[in-house]
Length: 450
Image (tube, rainbow, N blue to C red; front, side):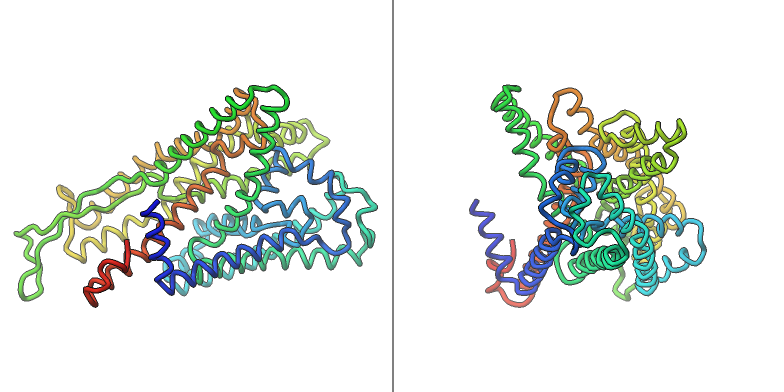
């Protein structure tokens, strides 16, 4: 506890870090407030049926969780940040086949800005299709016609579509501002805040089910809590696990050259078991809405009915099989994008470093790529296993669907991954300030960091 208080004290002493945390919290509060603002022309009192349909599991429950309850509230942020995630998936997939995007990926910061601009425009295009679909689906989801105060004419639809599109763009802007001016990955933090907002209610429903309905009692709740903490620990190990590749550097001569006959200090390249973080989960979850949507479009055929029945239940067999396969595929795909082994090998060669027993250059790049493939395979399997765990505990132990979603799956992995990433960024600020204090004056040595 003393250590924790000391860390908080050190954070307060670093003005830039304190400002960034304040900006992050402020923008997250804005997002949460926006999730409660109902669209003009809809009576919020008559949305109880929509809330009940999204309070449990199912695809609607997952979508409502990702939007932090905005979907069930018919709020200005009802579409959430998922259209931006979908646009990012499309752009990254097109980057494999389209030479123009491949060229932009190699242009550094300027290319990244251009790709972000393309992603934004694609997000708007997706929202233009999703917004009317959401508004028309409200009646099918239990919202009575009397809830639409202005009716469903153009006088309601056009302004509402504009508001929903603007809400998503504003949420995207909030996420980008958090990334630039705050702490952590803004888009992931927005999703995480929405997930955390549903945690207390999900636990309360499970508690009521176990205690008041004589379905195990407090002992079962205690066991479930202990198991949940253990799963959290396993997820942390999954996110933090690394494979260390030893690297040696040749000593430099007095003239600045490299003496390859003398070996300098040994260091390591840390290759993460799960280098892609939570992005494969987010990408896979975004695509899992597609089969059920295709089934609804072809509901008259047997295939359409099967798709709708099989992929509307997030605890079903076929849903989880496809979900696991997509996670494995996206883990390899995103790792290949985020871990440029060729660039790592070139940088290592230029700095006079080498992996013992491996020639610098192409052989080093092939060696690193082979190691990444070997550790990504078990990492992707572990990631997929944790992702489908909610379906396992739901069927085996009869948990409430909302609480089961936090036993692994998208919810837990996103929360753990984003929390670790944010804590690491805060820790980096603390360590950097500690280093600066040592270099400037000895008086700051005891107070500048941890």
